[in-house]
Image 1 (cartoon, rainbow, N blue to C red):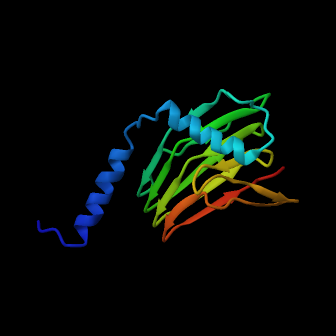
Image 2 (image 1 turned 180 degrees about the vertical axis):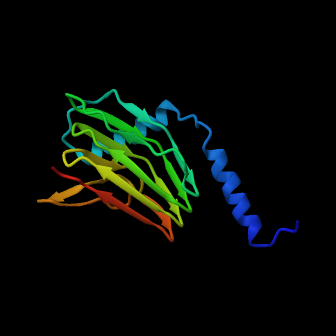
Length: 163
């Protein structure tokens, strides 16, 4: 079967995305600098200078197939979470950050011809390490989260379901 000129780039993109699904090594220095950027963006936070944190794995979804990261277990005290990069190609993805005591530090989210929806608890804190550090701004019930992702013919939305 003969491949067209349009098919080759798509096959290469899919192969590249599949390679990204294998676990990536992240150095402690990279993680520490990402956490430092988020802590600086938040300003006042309960974690001190050398915080402990958990890490959510890298998420790769192609054509709607792949992992979707989530943190749904509530904690009794503040929990610092580093969310590794997320890649979504030609499909939809939902990231759930539902711990009301969660302080979520997001690395870059990339979406190409897809949709990414981030569901965060009303009381959760979000910051992004991309484009410097960006923090959620809140005016009453209005929240915004800028510079969270790199998109190409895509959409990214942050939902704040409040009870």
